[in-house]
Amino acid sequence: MVRIKVTALLLFFAGSIVFAQGRSLEDLFPHMNQERREQILTGVLTEAREKDSNLYMQPAGEIGIKVSGLMTADLRPSCLVESLTVIPYLDKPVELLDIYNAMGKVRDLKGRLYHSFTRDENVPLFEDSTRVESPKRTRAIPDPAATYTLPRSDRIYVCLKDINFGNSYYQADISVEEYGLLYGLSNFKSLSYGIIPVIKEKKFNAQFYVEPLTEGVLVYSVAVAEVSDFIAGRINIPSAIRKRIEVILGWLIDNIAGS
Image (cartoon, rainbow, N blue to C red; front, side, top):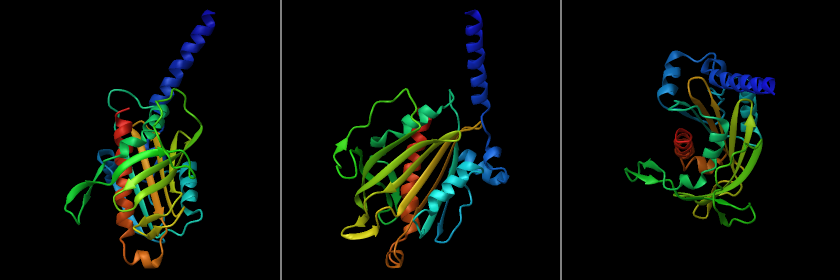
């Protein structure tokens, strides 16, 4: 009995040591220069590029390959937006379960601000945000209470009342990948400006990879959208995608930091 207790205690501390060490920024980005390293440790590095661009900031290894594959599946991107940051630890370590619960707080997206240059003021990008039952039954449902068990994968459906696109519907897929969580977001209905479809169904895809590192919690995101040449000539799609990713990224960072 004593041996069992000692073994369990050793396993507990061994697990704690592994978590405390974890992977480092160097492990995932071995060729990152010092300037970029300082940028992501003190803020958010974001780049928006036109079509036919490659990923420049994705992590090394299997997760980078997976994200790259997800970005090219069934899409001919008109633009690409990448972001990278590290959230510093505060008074306690952050575990994957904390991150999963942070990802589930859909209603917290409501009212988050962005700077509108046309209005020259900060305005809510999403006037409302809620889960919905399914693509066929878009009745609003509440966010669940925090869970104590981390699922290997999960799928939810979200409605964001977008200041430009009105009610916008997304499928969110959350899965455990390597040492982190991957949060994928794609539109299951067209994103329209009035009666004009801007981004057709399944033509927007964003991936957020989150992993606790030794330096803090890594958040890497990449988003692509495919639009027609007609739309691209009339709407600044890279800017439109970038502001939405920045708002979603801010929501995710704040929820993880407060977990």
